[in-house]
Image (cartoon, rainbow, N blue to C red; front, side, top):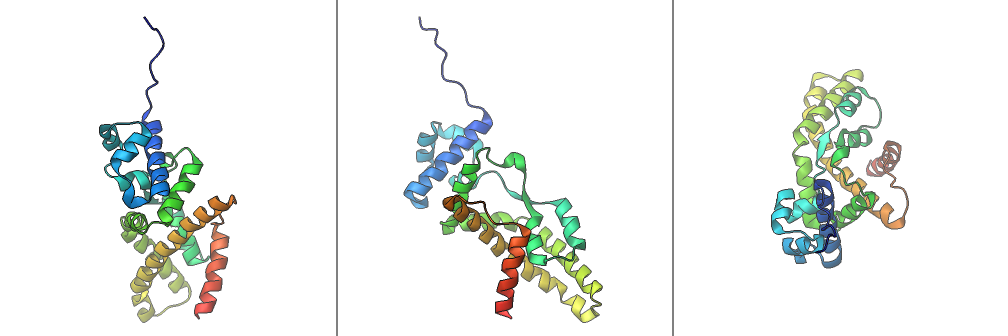
Length: 211
């Protein structure tokens, strides 16, 4: 009788990573519309039951479990800062490190897949919507601090909620740019240029052209 051990059972994190990797690779190869949960299960070597124990939908497997949240420390610093508003606002949104894939290349491939697919981009933006109200409130506090520092009158202060909403929508577009910059840098094998100083310089050049 054989005494060879059976295949090693995967841990939860390993299975999650295998599903995400299979989903991203399949979409990259075949396109979003052509990929099914059955295909992902086959590529990852799992059952549908295991898939749905980890992810509710195909989109969830593609986008991963690393949902955005407000960085509270960054928020406190942002409100009292006098630095570049929109570039610093990009630092308000963080991903919990323990929710990120252990394989950095998986993050890069995900960004690349999402940035090239309108459906996935829309789903990713929906995740930002979940924290949009809190973002708007934080941005409004920062705008109020700036306005009071500059001696704004009541009429100017009354306009701040509208300004905060505009900045919040601009931030969503800026985060999309950051994600696509990561994907381009990954394809070129170069470090992603997404620091606050880099963003501030780019934004300043753009704003000068709009003025």
